[in-house]
Amino acid sequence: MSDRDNKLHFCQSCVRLDYTQSLTGLEVPDPMVIRWNVTIPELTGQQPRTAYVYLPTCYDSQPERRFPVLYMFDGHNVFFDSDATYGKCWGMKEYLDYTDTPLIVAAVECNHGANNERLSEYSPYDFRNPRFGKVKAAGRQTMEWFVNSFKPEIDRNYRTLPDRRHTFIAGSSMGGLMSLYAVTEYNRVFSRAAALSPSLWVSPSGLAQTIAEADITAGSVVYMDYGARELSHHEAMRAEFGKVANQLLMRRILLTTRIVPGGEHCEASWERQLPFCIPALMYGL
Image (cartoon, rainbow, N blue to C red):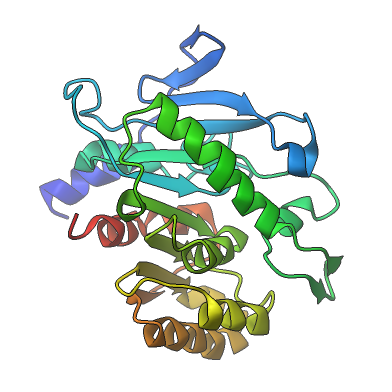
């Protein structure tokens, strides 16, 4: 193992800090990750959920500089093991700190309701599934909130580059599906997306129609992957992954795809993909 690999392994394994202070109502678990409560009235009324913003290592030392923004789904799984659903996060802060990536990350917690609320909020399409039953799509309402409420708030309060070229979106599983939907249907807002282990099974025909009919600017960027071990459980996904990749290519999207050796459907696996998906989003800026 090289010195750099040793450092990265240490960085990704280090203990993440808990709350240290509270300022103007914003809880600050770490000097570079700000946490506060937001509401999404269109979806859950005044029920609060947690939002997070990561500021790059050079944010304070370069006060005149503005930065691209990556928006993410399932924000509770992005930064802190203590917040993550299964006790393991993506380690996003550690990776971005270690690589000194000049990127703001803004993420929002999902709906944890017991009646498939997350599936509903993160699906652009109605669907029926033997395990989950009938799920009503609320993905459009979710994206309208991201675009019309959350993004303006981030742009007001932080030194962002708010234009389309510097606005990205990412997620995994249902969040990966939403990222594909966002970068196509909301291509006027998001120029680049990362979809890790996207839930392509939800509505193949719906996603195909979105990709075919959306107003997509040539040269938009998509990173899309799927774990090799996931494929062993969902063999039909191999063909579906190829179909979606081909559809994206036909729309002149600049596409990076990977079948991840040993990749699984979990945050620990997605953390290991950061050295692939983050450079794909930042390349050429």
